[in-house]
Picture (cartoon, rainbow, N blue to C red):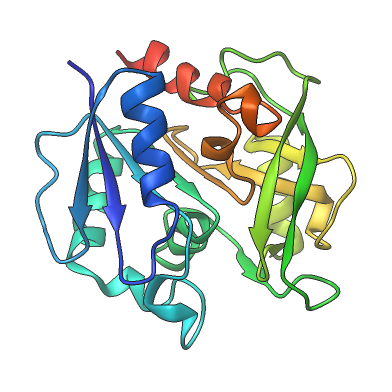
Length: 221
């Protein structure tokens, strides 16, 4: 049976949302894994949720990368285990080097909490295979540091290698090339600022996020 680890840091606040969706909508086995743990051997998928790990002190995700569990996340990712980092989880993946680039303050330097529309850029990865290139998805964002930046060579590399998973249709935060989510070179790590776990039931206004989780589950298991 598919088993997913939802990591928990001091300050995580979307961990319960992710747990509920995976357990109750997708019916897979899921467990919270505390950041001081160091073993993920029994898990087939890893989710790093949103929130404010360590209160976002110093820099978002910068302290979380030193938690014992992150060494194991890096190790498992190198073995092909799917890893998805959402919002603060994306920031952590950037800080620990699993994804390139950085996230800085939104262009208006304000916390943004609103629904956004995304355009699917690639449907060949394990995170997007249930989608079509060009599809429009709607889901919420909730961040202050969501403005994706990278040097020109990195941006070109992401574009040329189809590693941009999602773009904003109406860029709310100033991200370069409208980037909302990217993957690693091997295609088993996804970082994205919007929250698919908050868009898995029409009662919330959209269930477009379901297709991302279903893509992982069906392609891997």
